[in-house]
Amino acid sequence: MALDLNPKQASQSFRVGEISADNAAAPDDLDDALMAEAEQQGASGYRITSVSTMAPYAGTATLYR
Image (tube, rainbow, N blue to C red):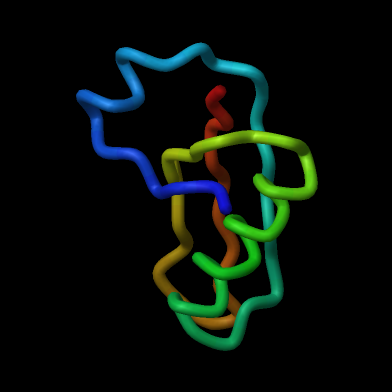
């Protein structure tokens, strides 16, 4: 399971890529989609870097190992 990292955890981890997700009905759905994509990419953690403020929600995250 990929963990949503806090800034300190992210700074102590190795950055391995970027992901994005879109068309989420709610912010929680976006978080779930980003977590699923992070896991699919083999990341142990991720940090959300952007989120749209209106539905459908979209966002990006940085992946870490």
